[in-house]
Length: 290
Image (cartoon, rainbow, N blue to C red; front, side, top):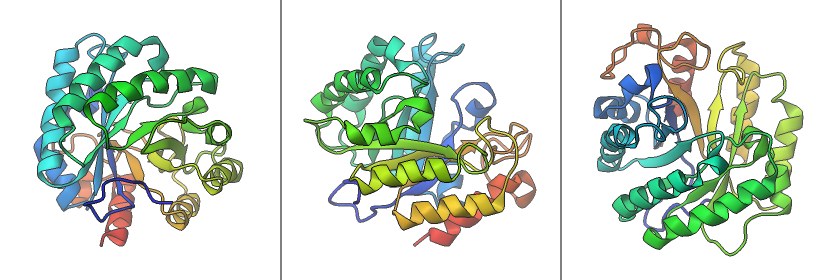
């Protein structure tokens, strides 16, 4: 399958990088210069904007701060002709339905004109019933479609976007141009053949899948960086032509951070500013760049 990204745009498989939570240490990288760096130096064709929701200074506590923080990076990516995933970065979106609906109504009204916008309506639901996630999606999708009849909407699944085998047996109906997010951490001992086989089964059953987040390390963001396991996952994504986004642009001292501590906030990163993950992802994006 290929995602129906937009008829006028020839790219059917996207590869890129996720900004970190739009709070804490990752927030300082929410600026147009970093977007330029991700496009020019890393060759991203998609950038994920991970707007924090529940923590202090997230959208629930300070919606205007978050609105003003995300707009410059979204606008710059669109100016540069690169896809954006607008990610409602929340583990408990079913508790925050009104806030999510208000945000996506406002956001889709502003950006529906652009074929480069994608909506990820719930980042990583925890271990809850698929019916709860499905009901949430059935509430949010019409809010977006009222303003934006075409662009891709990405729906999560339980167990941090890993239970897409359950989704494949009972997908949403009555909507068009949907995909389902699948997340993994390539070196995590619990994210190996068994998880990959579950995802493969869902894909081969016809479920449209978008890997909106994956990391080179383990699911806590840290841990081992196993090159062989990373290669296995990348080869798998390429086999199924899956679009993917790597986690994440931050200078936190952990395995999946792409930047070393105190890396410049305006991009222009040199080799010494990149972690092993940063160097590796840059190499992979260059490898697949057309």
